Length: 74
Figure 1: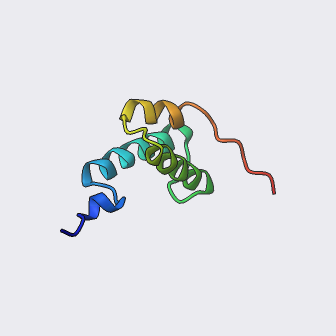
Figure 2: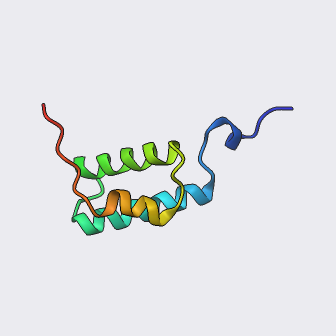
Figure 3: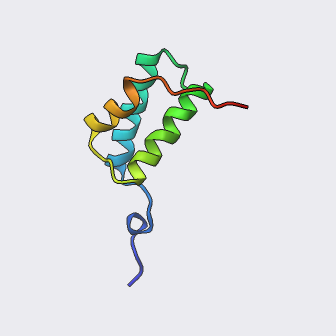
């Protein structure tokens, strides 16, 4: 039997909604435009945390919403 799309590592709609809420709130708190480099770093961090198993919305918010990401050195 073929695997469902969710069994192949794709996000379920509820997971996408959670990540979007956390992303939107983190951008708002940091005053980062959603298309900015900082927002991209927030998104990448959220995906990495989620892929590592952190799925709780409050934990994700705490991880990205209350600290500034250090700018990457060139």
